[in-house]
Image 1 (cartoon, helix red, strand yellow):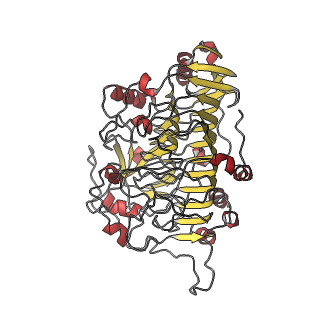
Image 2: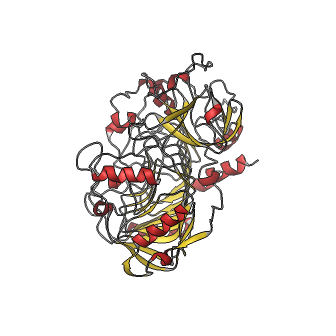
Length: 578
């Protein structure tokens, strides 16, 4: 089936049918750091906000007009205009074909296992320094999983309707049980790994070895304990939205380098408070017993350096947070990331098996990006999978014209372990083809684990929800989406708040009128809900994590098509180019 775009009108018209589904060697902190403004309950203090009318009877200035007055520092709306691979480029790279899987022994009639041949072709392309591995039209049986471990390697089929990879075995069978680091019998294949898996070769080898030894593998940008890093330089104080940093020693930096901005927390948890918007509510919140959440700190944000002027380092994206001396801000290097790799033009078909009980997934997963930057998937369909498309410690990646369909997936899309600045656009989650078995869960488009500045744009969700799995993700945007909101969110208490600051839902049509996780103004701090359908609560009712005024905004409620601009991400991109 070709991956065509399903219009909002077509989906809404067919809704009735759907109803029938830190210590480092050699580093000395600068003894005289530059001063930073004191903490304040107002994250925009010191800046000139856009004026708002004082009279309750007057209409408020629209959110978009406010945003354009301060596009990188708005208190509710995050800047996401450069999310995605290569800054959200409309046309992704198409490197020349250097390998054909048929030359390595793949059989397009499905008569034999083609996984070894495809993996040989991928490895050969990596040895050449990159290029496209062509998978001609046909149906290829894969009894193993496919691994893209070298930068610049693209696996390209003839189109999702013409090249089909038919998987026969799960990741549990191929690698082994992947237990949770939080104990119990949970399967981490419920939120990790893919039958097409993009991750750096060395990182991937150690990860697989750890799973087979029943140890918890290296997952984050610098490891599970966040200790696999090397300091490049300390960073002077800076503010959210700045495009430049002043560093103490630029000698180990260069243009085009991919670095991590690393922010640790202090004893008072002021970094976590800052991610939640600062102020009395976050200050009063109990953080120390949220052990899963605190394991995600330090916060690590990958970014490329575009220019260096003496001690001033220019970045391709503005800072997502302040850099305050209390958080020991520094630029570090971690494990080498996979860059410039992708998957395009194919369908991955898993066996049609019933969905597993919650958190016991076998690992019939689709495409996962791990420790990847500037990578992508385009025109890719996954069918009958446990989990669809994954971003695990992955940043600046684009998923475009992707689709999850078939018997129903636990996480159609998951975004976790500090994944930032990703773009998922023109996506579709199709209605289930079989009823959901008892004891299973459907989450929809997921984000968790301090992941920030990710965008879901122009989507159709015939099932699922806007899953925020605790772990306090912040500054994420979902825009121009139609959803039959029938899923539920997950996340345990030790993962902390559902939301940090600056979550935005913009132009969202809810076809069944259910509120859960779409309307934000009563639960998410410093959030914006603009142009959503009129919705009502259901049995999973969430209460705010933070006491007091949430400083939220609600605009064009009940009128999705009335909000302007219609797509917040695209409007930010256009505004960026002015």
